[in-house]
Amino acid sequence: MRKTLYIIGLSAVVFSCTSQQNVKKTAYKRKTPVTQAKTAVTTQPQAKPKPQITTDHGVEFYTTNIADITKNDNTISYGSIVSAKPAGYKVTKTYFPAIAQNFRQKYLILHYTALPEDKSITVLTQQAVSAHYLVNDKEDNQIYQLVDENKRAYHAGISSWRNDKNLNDTSIGIEIVNNGYTADSTARRIFVPFSEDQIKKVAALAKDIVTRYQIPPTNVLAHSDIAPTRKQDPGPMFPWKKLYDEYQIGMWYDEATKKTYYDLALVEFTTRYNEPAFIFMIQTALQKFGYGVEPSGKWDDATKKTIEAFQYHFRPQNYDGIMDAETWAILQALNVKYPRK
Ligand SMILES: [Zn+2]
Image (cartoon, rainbow, N blue to C red):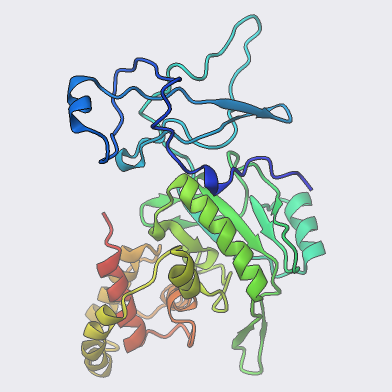
């Protein structure tokens, strides 16, 4: 298993804005902490510290993040530095970092493997599918890295969310060892729960990734969210609310907003359930939230699967794929809290 070279501890999430020995003249000024005297800023622009580079096993890393996240400035950030080594020339990496850049990693996508650990490793390392990380179901402190974060892993397949498509290009994928589901006598899917220890691992890993890449809550998603007609993982047993409540990861609705929509939704569902305009409005709301569903005015198969994916994530107590008043109220509350820009 490849050593996880590219994770830099969260303890390093500090701006080295007090470092003076590395000051260099630059054309732009950094945001000054409130505690510093404002007069100093007006007379002389704050210089940007020169990034420090360390080498570990022959791979170079920036040691600190001197980007100003309040300005969406990711100039210098964590991780390995991959650069050309042209014969006879030296590539300078520290003098001229450009402001106009950002991370390619925009999404974090969670999966389950539907296989035990040994088979998961075989499939994810030896076949045409992969993920950046694999979280086992053991009570240990191991998380396996299978793909460099700067490289594309093949975990999302045909996928979309809001304006983005083919999310392998812009995402980090985490596979979680879990056996998925079995079908009961009525063909209803019965999903296998995740252990507490495993969820802690996933949460710690996810927190590290969304912090380093500044991935917004709207872009932390299930595989089933970005491919609802094909995928169910990580399924309704995955505790999205716990991740939101305890780790501030991903999206969740406000209960009070949901309540304001619920009473009206109850009336709508008794009077308008099969009305094409009503169905169209709900499909449009799903699409606005992010799902790649085409409004048709009918409760078609794609819509049913999309509703099921939504329920896996946001109303896991009942995931029958049938839109109901509670699901509709939650969807509206989410669209209020996380509007599409
Ligand atoms: Zn998946």
